[in-house]
Amino acid sequence: MEKRDTGKLSEQDLKGLEIRVNELISTCEELKKENRLLKLQQDSYSSERATLIDKNEQARKRVEAMITRLKSMEVSA
Image 1 (cartoon, rainbow, N blue to C red):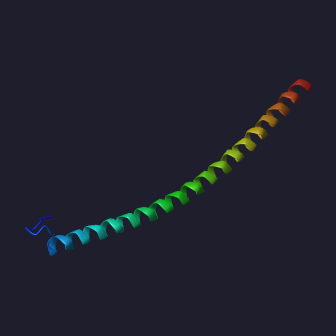
Image 2 (image 1 turned 90 degrees about the vertical axis):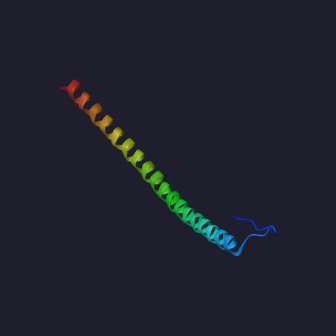
Image 3 (image 1 turned 30 degrees about the vertical axis):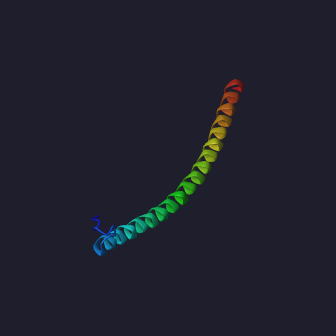
């Protein structure tokens, strides 16, 4: 940006600055929106992960119970 002898910004400089500020505001709004969406997605994935961990634990317990029953059948046979 050029300064004139009077120390003031030219009309062109001000217009360019205004355009740049508006671009920054727009970018900031887009990033805020994207951030909100990513946080929602992260919450969803965290919830899904917790559900999958629970299902995995239930499956592990069922498999362990089956193994225990099979072993007891071997011993009694």
